Length: 198
Image 1 (cartoon, rainbow, N blue to C red):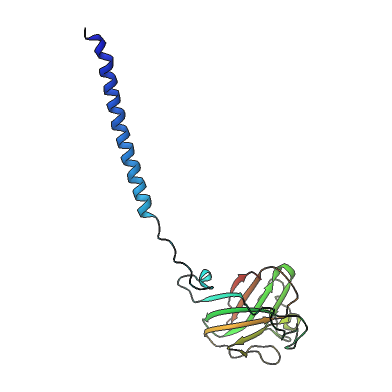
Image 2 (cartoon, rainbow, N blue to C red):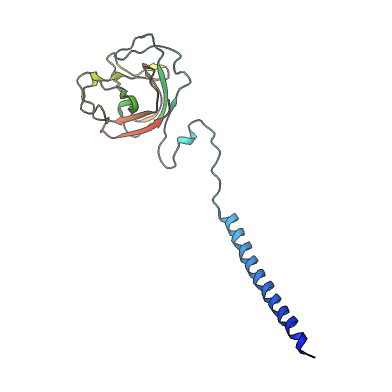
């Protein structure tokens, strides 16, 4: 009379083990989910400035962008500070310079174009394409701060000391497209650079 009860009892034991295992697995899964939700990194703060996406922690500011004033006036030609009938490109550059600034470059590698403050017979020491060339072989780059030109009449910049600067870079426009590399070269020959879209 006891034989018919053996299978139901075994089934109950099997069901009990299944429920116990399911409980353990569920507990572990819940713990993992809780850890994942609480251990994930805090979201980055929302940018509050058009320059914020370029800022990096623990280094001095060095940011550049195409200015809203680009192509709104014409004051530059390739080798002079005179209008040439083509609206100029304008870039905004913010920098905390570690030392005096010797030269500034705007480079369009895709089309082999370069605007800079190297002039005359001075050799260009920075540039993949123009290193070793004379300054007279590249186009002038105008540099202004607070609406005042920092270039001498020949195009060289003088007296751009270490410290915080908000600069406006003006380049005669050849209707070129593609990203630009903006580079600041310090008095000791070292440089910093940032790539922007034009």
